[in-house]
Structure formats: structure tokens, C-alpha cells
Image (cartoon, rainbow, N blue to C red; front, side, top):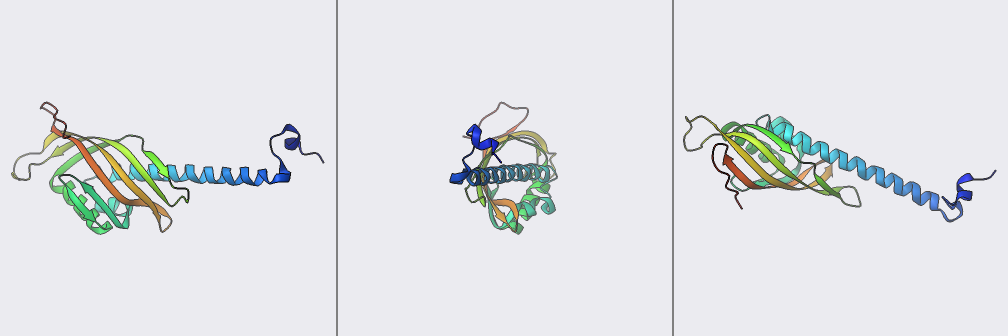
Length: 180
């Protein structure tokens, strides 16, 4: 029987090109699935953040030995510490928020076990003045850039490192003064 692909010049079975095309296609699909999973991770991060950084939602997004940092909010290590500290921030400082995350730029390593993920943040927030616990929260604009490392841990993508570079934290009723 004649092989129609061989005669159109699409694939040369004799040299193993079909195996390479199949393997490449499988790798490409796996990479696209990894990117989708990481995009979902970023979405779940925003979802948890908009619920006062709920520890039960945020904790599972991080690896056991993760690190999270942002100027003004500190550096925290380990899933449990990160979840607890983010929840504290959501209860005491940023008491309401709505996160708008841009489409992340995701660079997946060839082994599909690690990736770099970067995205921009635009956030509407109500922030309490920590020096005056009785004052009402004030509306703020928050803008910044996230830079993260994500890994596969126990069969799921999670954050290994998250760094938030805040570029703007400003009251909504005042002139914008970028941070840097």
C-alpha cells in the first residue's frame, strides 16, 4: 500500500522523521498545557488575594520552601509563613482589594518542571493606616510587576519564588507619585 504522506513529501518514514514530528508535537502540547496550568495558578493567586489573602486559598499555591517578597511588606519563607503573613496583611492592612493581573509572560524550561512567570498588577484597594487603628480604610491605586519562579511539586505547578516590585501605592484622591 502506498503512503500518501510519503509521496507529498510531508514525512520521510525511512529516516524516522515521523517519530521526531510526533515527539515534538507531544512536547509542544505538554508545554502549552504547562503554560495553561501556570496561567491558572496566577488566576488562583488573584482570586485568593481578593478574599483577604485567605490562607486556605493562598497556601496551596506555594511550594513547601517558597519565598515571597515585596518592598513594604517584607520577605517571607515557607508555605505556612507566606500564607499566614499574606492573610495578616489582608486582615490588617489591605482590607479590600480587586486584583487585575495582565496576561503572564511564561518561559517554561525544556524539562517542563520549572518556569519563570512575570506579569503586571493593577489593583484597587482599601488600605488601613497601621498607625491609627480607628481610622477608616482609604481607597488606593496599586501598580506593580510580579516576577516569579514556578515549579512542579507533587504533580502540580506552584510558586517557588514570588517577588512583587511595587511601582505605585497611592491614594485615589491624590496625584500619582510612582515609587521608582
